Amino acid sequence: MSLLADALEHLVRGIVDHPDDVRVTLVTTRRGRTLEVHVHPDDLGKVIGRGGRTATALRTVMAGIGGRGVRVDVVDTDR
Amino acid sequence: MSETLQAAEVDATEVEAAEDTVEAEPKTRGSSEDLLVQEGDIAGDYLERLLDLLDYDGDIDLDVEAGRAIVSIDGGEDLEKLVGTRGTVLESLQELTRLAVQQETGVRSRLMLDVAGWRAGRRAELAELGRTTAEKVLSSGERIRLHPMTPFERKVVHDAVAAVAGVHSESEGEEPQRRVVILPQA
Image (cartoon, rainbow over all chains, first blue to last red; front, top):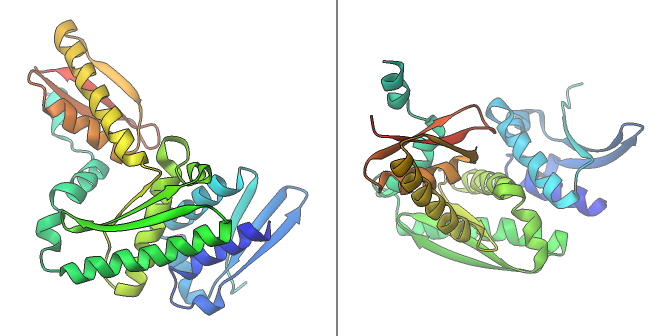
């Protein structure tokens, strides 16, 4: 599982202005497993993309390599 | 009238896909071959690291063709996961790779990613499907709707249909259910 988190962290680091601020954590809840993506507030737009396009691409790739059932959430770090 | 309108209405995503191939050269003429080589290098590093992290076997081949960088990954069975159903994972990985390249060069990338020869194989299959379906429509005089496809797939089918006289093609529906319809020429 940390393999999936590492892969996602790498994919996100490559597309942001502040790669050192990227953290991916695996959270397990009753609803299942979620990979939470934390990025620098200025990079939120980049990770989400126009119309959520980039976030969707990240989810699609993670579903491909991790099978289904793993959610990907981009966390707003201001909260 | 509505028929004409429909025909005139051009699919934005396919135009984009068409521009990717048709207009790649004029648009990138200003950018040097060096930039495209650099694009390939950045993409190669990004993808190689991904393969390492996932422990997937794969060789990355870099090329520059028709004004764009081409990155191909070939290797073990694991790579099928990076292609996905109907190439959906491949499309997403290409999107992310283009963003990673743009992040470093500051220029929007048009690079093409292929994994396990999927695009090459799929292109031949789809061109054949477009051609044979166009011939069916030509002899029956009745329209045929194909199954939903990605913009890349529809583009290949449209091109194949365009090569057959007496028929034409359109796209209908919303992504991801958008599909090609082949009709007899009015």
